[in-house]
Amino acid sequence: MLQVKEIDVYYGAIHALKKLSLEVEQGKIVTLIGANGAGKTTTLKTISGLLRPASGTITYKGVDLTRVPPEKIVGMGISQVPEGRRVFAPMTVQENLEMGAYLRKDKKEVQRDMELVFERFPRLKERRKQLAGTLSGGEQQMLAIGRALMARPELMLMDEPSMGLAPLLVREIFEIIKDINSRGTTILLVEQNAHMALSIAHKAYVVETGSIVLEGTPEQLMNSEEVKKAYLGG
Amino acid sequence: MPFTVYKGEVAIMLEFLQQLVNGLSLGAIYALIALGYTMVYGIIMLINFAHGDIMMVGAFVGFYSITLLGTNIVMAMIFAMIACAVLGVLIEKIAYRPLRKSTRIAALITAIGMSLFLEYMTIFLIGPQQKVFPHSAFPHKEYDLMGLLITNKDIFIIISAVVLMLILQYIIKMTKTGKAMRAVSVDREAAVLMGISVDKTISITFAIGSALAAAAGVMVGVYYNTINPLMGIIPGLKAFVAAVLGGIGIIPGAMVGGFVMGILETFVSGYGSSLYRDAVAFGVLVLILLIKPTGLFGKDTGEKV
Image (cartoon, each protein chain N blue to C red):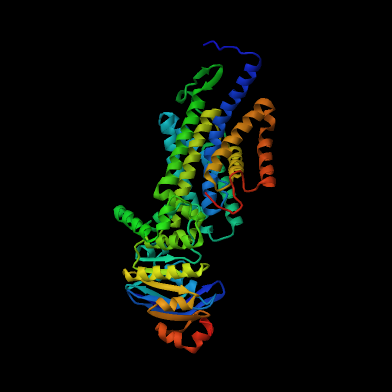
């Protein structure tokens, strides 16, 4: 579904991604784990078109995304749950969800999808008229996920959805990710919480200083000495 | 029509209310201009110093619409709004967009350059003389409301300003475009991830802000009777003060700030001396910047629109 091939991305003089390659198969949960600053967020931003690779290609369903403007990439079926949630704080919960469906013209279906989001996250329904900035961290994460779902994505990019959440909530969020995937949405999940990410993924990549250093099934990675030492705490 | 003569406390009260009415008209004009400043700032963090001059262009488009095309005042205002919406979009595309990734000071200096360009281009094209807004387009009428003198100009200005502000509120709060404008102003990158085109949204913001300025320009023509190519400078600066007073980037703040500035100015002219009215307006700017730089409606968190 998505092939990232040998992309190089620079932030000014900093070489953030070095010939990074990965592949996401339709229907799967693929996770990208690694330390802070390894290049996980940069990878997702480059796929979404917010950053442009200096070289390499990103192919989605046969189209080269590196030439598509970011706002069009959303329309092609890729939506992102950005790092730090990035909900529109001074707008209401409902308005945030409407923004997620910004490109869609099928008003009735949008309405239906909003009801589905509210079914999945009843707390958002109670707070639909409330400003997003007044929600708790967990609720904001749910809103960010709901907002991304409103685009009806085929591929969802999730950037550290567990960041800053209480352990119980982290579990809940991962259950939700599994559920979204089981209903047909492909997921590329970036996580620092390697344990949780590996527990739900079908395939995993380890990124270090801008390059993929390991890849395989979660079982393979969980048994790898390097991964155990570096990411799973022994 | 003979006017009733009031004495004593009633007269003082009437005088006060009279100044208030005059202040409301002027305030409505400032508020409309301030809205454009604040909307543009909210979305691209630029003080568009050419904004007052867009207002001036609007006044001239309105003037020529009346004198050359023979339209009525309402049509003149609509033409001015359309022309300036286009002008605003072009200015942003040609002058500001190429600088979007440069420093803010570069864009600010460009805005000052654009302001001078509009002023002197207008002088080059039609000369520096002031033009008298045709009386035929707006026959003077006044009404005695229990001793309070209200002109049809006041009524026209206040009603059209309120209607325009209600339309603006509707656009910002209820339409998809308005919500996209707010989203871009809150978090541009997140807005892009929703599929919102930032360029298009910024263009729409300039179009709306400039159209409001154009409406204000026609109102200035009606209010002061004369227009000239440099007429945008002082009202533009005062509207800027109004926007800062309300909290730059905050739409209701611009409205309130505009009315406060207009009322303040008429009171200073009415009770003090009109010599001081400009000094007081800019004194307000100094005071806000000293006491509460985020403005009346501003939060220190930097939340916008």
